[in-house]
Length: 165
Image 1 (cartoon, rainbow, N blue to C red):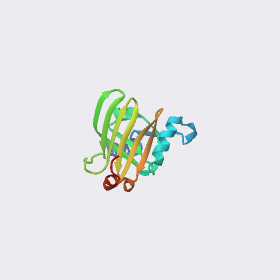
Image 2 (cartoon, rainbow, N blue to C red; image 1 turned 180 degrees about the vertical axis):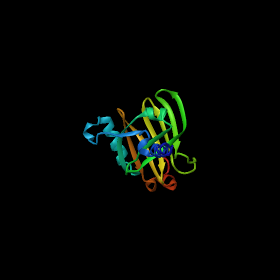
Image 3 (tube, rainbow, N blue to C red; image 1 turned 90 degrees about the horizontal axis):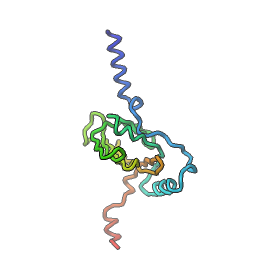
Image 4 (tube, helix red, strand yellow; image 1 turned 90 degrees about the vertical axis):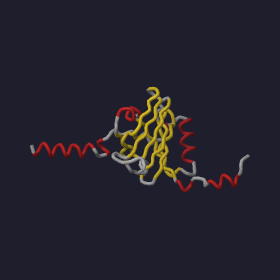
């Protein structure tokens, strides 16, 4: 009986670790020469954005968002974050929205992920430990996850000073 309890506790602890949860992203080939012209153009535009700090090209297993209650996301720079589903709005098989947060956390804790899938293309935003990440489709099943430098965002008065033309 004691061994069964210990095994159950160990199994529960392992199930709660990020490695035991379904991963949303998988590494894509790092060779940019394999990208189509459209994918390369989209990636170049993202990398040249002054708010982009770092970009990681991945593939996404979209079925994970529809099927798993908990998913892990490996973010650029190394952190692996676990998100628990909070809401799934399924419009069509390849058209849905998903939002999640820290398992056991509240929507106000600053840890969140919001994804929209349309036509099999994934876009979204992730917040974790004060960092903000964007998720953008590159096409052909590839997705770019970019860490955003919030200090590089234009200030509101910059837009007002420049005026509208």
